[in-house]
Length: 115
Image (cartoon, rainbow, N blue to C red):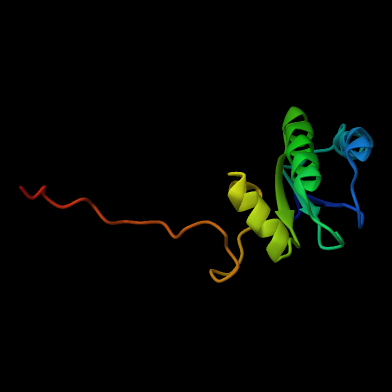
């Protein structure tokens, strides 16, 4: 974690009713602080599901409203898959290639069309 980063830890379980309180907690943490990156630590989650993804997306919006960027750290394989399936893989912190749910970048240019 760099000098301009803040670590925000999410608990072991999240329900939909927890989301507003999480966003308020993050907003209170960021309000009036200088920085640029929130590292949202989800390593403690016991049962990742779509509600967790919704919570992280809302936390991202909260961070952006305060001028910060949010990435997710500590995601297990199930949560990585959910983020990938829902098109939110860009929220994940860079990981090793074997754990990255995003397809590798393709630098190939299309060849000439064949008749």
